[in-house]
Image (cartoon, rainbow, N blue to C red; front, side):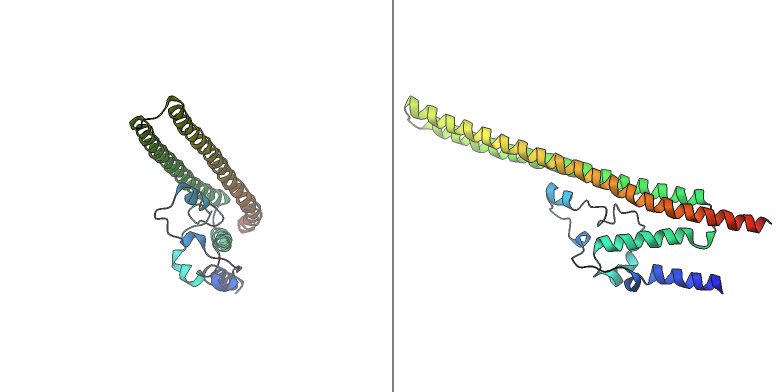
Length: 223
């Protein structure tokens, strides 16, 4: 009877999370279309607490319709709890097997994160190169216009100086944008590692309790 009640409770948690989970306010950012996003927009979306591609959960897409009004971060936390409960239910799995499953999940999510972050950097580089090309072409056209005009030496020098000032301002702005991008890039990576550590600490604490109970039951069976 006790085992039956445990299974019933676990089923409610996993399959009825639209009732048991926390609810919050705000849209689900993971549902926004990724089409035609800039590097900055894609960078903003790389939040492991909101994007299930990086969060330490398994695919539970068939339940998403039931949970469509729950914010992504809340859903992620609930899914993590349900996943650990599933792994540790019944005290049947060896603790080492559970740890291996968790390590494999972390590796998969880190691989997803690294792949997307590298793509974001590549996209930013392409955007930056395009800006340079457009600007260089525009500046070349301005220089050609000056060449075609009949100007005094002083006026010509002044015109070229203005173009050179534009060039310096443009590249100064590019450097500022690059510094800002790199700072965001480093922060996102730091956020991900902090997220993994935070969730790993929770998992390790739960696994420790599970291991103690598992060994206790195993010892009792051996008597």
